[in-house]
Image 1 (tube, chains in turn yellow, green):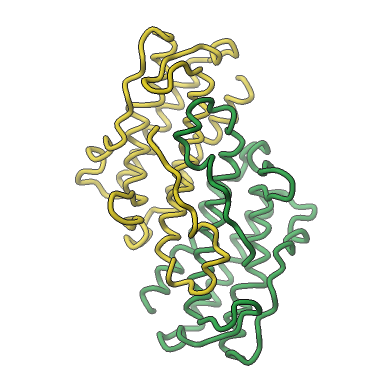
Image 2 (spheres, one colour):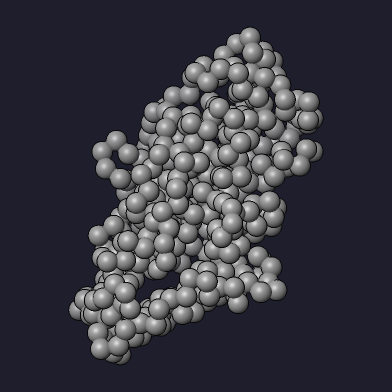
Length: 181
Length: 181
């Protein structure tokens, strides 16, 4: 397998395990906290990651391979994870994320993508032409964006509690810089 | 135990497991990467966390309880982790971090801190008066600062690879905002 793809898969495979280690059975003070109105808690983020597994990454890989640039991807619904969360516990979401991620990595490996495949092009509904290679790199970078977000959201709960140390703790000044994907 | 302290301990106990899940056996492309000259890799960060376990948190807790504000803490050496790293593999560092963190949480629990203890004051060499409660909150927030940093450093490696998706990936625009603790 192409080395860059192998490295991306090794990262993608670890995210569910790392989130499980960080969040499972953690008090709800941490798992349901957010940064204020219309912001996400770690619980919401796990739902969003599941939703992206179902509707974004592998479906878009299939679109590139089948239609190239002739058909744009369906836009990703950034609020679409509400359905994933309904009536579920965080433990159920973590299990579900691990399952769908594992299934999707099996599908990705089964494609046996060659370097020339990674250069194939698709069409993003707002970004225009993108390559399969860029899509796969974005999948992994998107995991890291949300790990970055979860650590920031949890740290936010300590904003006052740390007192004068606040000025040494960069995460408390992180503005989030998130957007839709 | 005071609920806030219990919640802080539950977070502190998870960091070594989460970093282990994320980093162990990951290709060196991720574990040794950084953001340029004089910046830290995930490997460096784990060494720094070990160094802080040895010289910062519990030693400062002991200083507050023994000397109050009459003696300032020793300044923390932000480059002091070089000794921790020397000749070690990441796997060894992860094992060491889990061990020293676990020992330190045992020491913390054994202190049986009461709410009035948490209000006790110590003296930081540059910040001045701080409370034990602030010190313990900073211990946990410091973990989150470095989880935030590790996710940012790893994402940095995808800066070019994601192509036009870059504008949707907030982590790639995170300026770091770190400082010494």
